[in-house]
Image 1 (tube, rainbow, N blue to C red):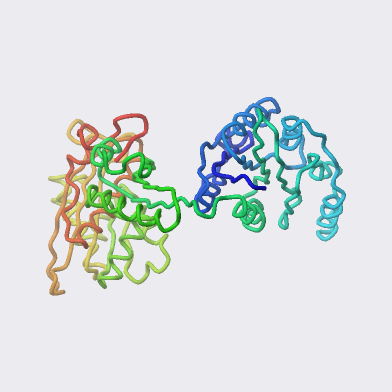
Image 2 (cartoon, rainbow, N blue to C red):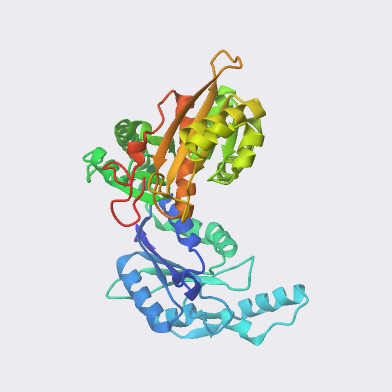
Length: 451
């Protein structure tokens, strides 16, 4: 073919996706792979298992893009309707592919199981389609060019099982797309992971930083972080040069709000800094219930810098395990800077670490009061002096977070890890006003927005 594929639409089919029982991870993975080929994803849709709805979604997608890649709806059961609908939209018949019949029978024979007759539905292929072999399952994929309103976009149909879809895409679809795309056109992108500023504040800081004729700027709020993505399109060398210049402007404007570039998590960044500086860390957790320790140990190799943590949920354990003074608890309460400070000191001493971070708070939904409402959290950081002697210095803050129990715990763990990051970089911790739900610089200002 001589015409080039420049953009794509993605379509995920299944009641389980539309109903929220299954998360569509296929589309995000596909979009990333397509971007690497310079293919612009113009839309991502999900549709339930209904022929009329699937047909309508396909027509919309085909009118919007040069290629539509769908996942799901290729199983053997009556609710798997993708192939039937594709044939209807394309105006072609379904034909039994005998090679696929033999392949499916062989799969069942090798497994020592009888093949149900309904598996033969998976060998029905729209006339004129080119089959894409599935080496990991029974459902083959295929691609078909469809005439619609004078245009001839491609339909690429793949199973919804991620392992099967990814294998077929990498073995067949991506090489085919590479031959169909413009080799002198790529999409280059850089993503900045930020924390501490809401989306609206980030938008104001970056106003005019990426002119529309130079590139694109996109924000993605994914609690408790916000990603800022800069992308450009063009010839490889020119796109790389332009991206570097735009990314430098964005990096300078966002400053210390950026904790990573790429896909690194806060815990990965903290781990890299601790490793680089040869520092060790311990945690003392109450309201977060071990979440900080869990996040730290999600990173491979964390044993190099993370000594361990103490989850002291009760006041009794705060005293016995962390050495919190009974009078501190009586006078100031469990949720106080004074208690958090003693927890951090206790953890640093118990684990003999350079740094210890402590959290204590009211995650809700109950337990709050007028003086200390739900969302009140105290965080403290204990650090050894630079010369490595036994002296500890401690810093603490009282925060007022928002949202449900999970949000309070997640936000507390993010702030605590960010404290460690900032300390290692010689930066001050985020001030409570920055993260207040009533602050102009923090909290949700529109649906779902967080800092």
